[in-house]
Length: 301
Image 1 (cartoon, one colour):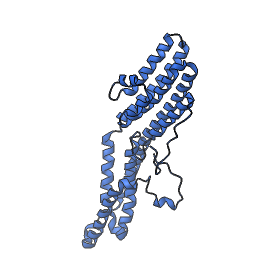
Image 2 (cartoon, rainbow, N blue to C red; image 1 turned 45 degrees about the vertical axis):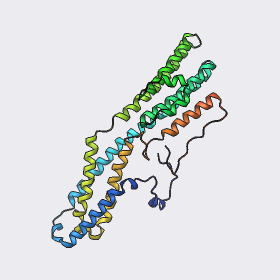
Image 3 (cartoon, rainbow, N blue to C red; image 1 turned 180 degrees about the vertical axis):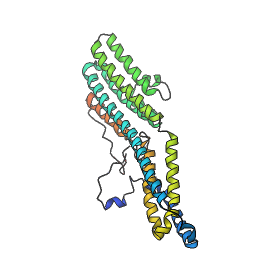
């Protein structure tokens, strides 16, 4: 996620890091070349462009902007839903850590706390298709070896958590009411996992995105030929502004619809996992706590 201080109105014109421009630069260059070609053709054969009415392009641009705005609203809702789910995971994890260190025996609560951190690592790695090794440091060798391979390790960590809590209850060290409190926390963590998996595996309809993508290309490629007779040498200027707006919204929507990706506008899952690690260290009273992650070149992962 891009994190950078608010710039001045003048400075906004020169910001590239964090802008969508680097991603759409090849498209803008293509549109610029088409605009220059349209000017040349108009100069060579002006008669071909005199009967072109710019009104259809105005209506098409208006409709396209409305549909792009609607799509970006959908994509932003997915992004914000992912952020809310991870905010819920941080809150539930802190509650679980607090209850573990105050209600469970000393020989048990450290393992419960570490499993909560391991679950956050495993879920982050699953959503980003990353190696699972980062969760290993928070589990015992026996627990790590007992985890199944593949994408089900986060759920397996919750099962191991529930099994130990049930064993503590069976031994009489945890009452039924308190066990129910822990079970509710684990159920909330499982619900967060299910919601994130839904977002990860159910993107917006591809045909809808494809339609808008094709329409944006057709509009930006045909626009110079419809406006060159009226604008002349100013055609590339207007065309580039519209191409920047339409291609930028299209590319931004593609990033927002995948909230857990490593794109510049993806959610900072590494930073959220680090927050849970810090909360775990505070709950256990560790003398040394990991530092919160900070943006590097305005990018927080």
